[in-house]
Image (cartoon, rainbow, N blue to C red; front, side, top):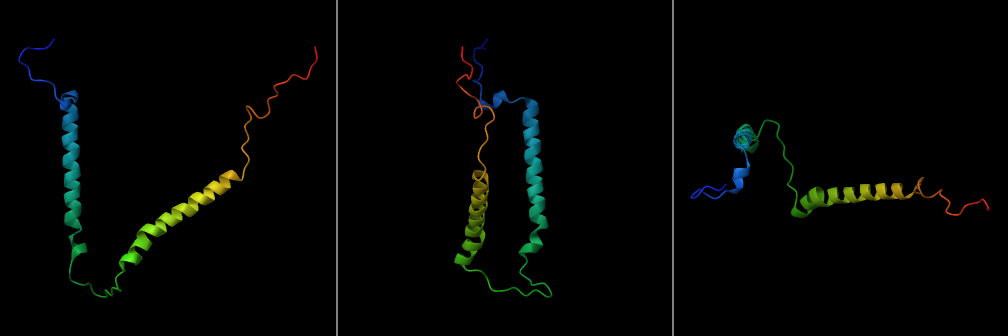
Length: 108
């Protein structure tokens, strides 16, 4: 049923018109929300200090990596290890195959 001289189908032809509208609507909503968040957060980037503001010394690169990279990874490893130890401490009970006898007790 190809029409002679018709353009070849594109990847977006599989999407219906409603899907395109919803995608554009979602994109516009996401862009608008991002823009509003950026506009509302501008006071966080202020160069003027607030009253009572007493910032401490900054963190070094090593301290920052340790605090925000190594510490979470270490906590993850400790928690995962505790879960594995707690899981392996129980013997696995398989009620479907561990209590099945393969030889019959009765003699014929």
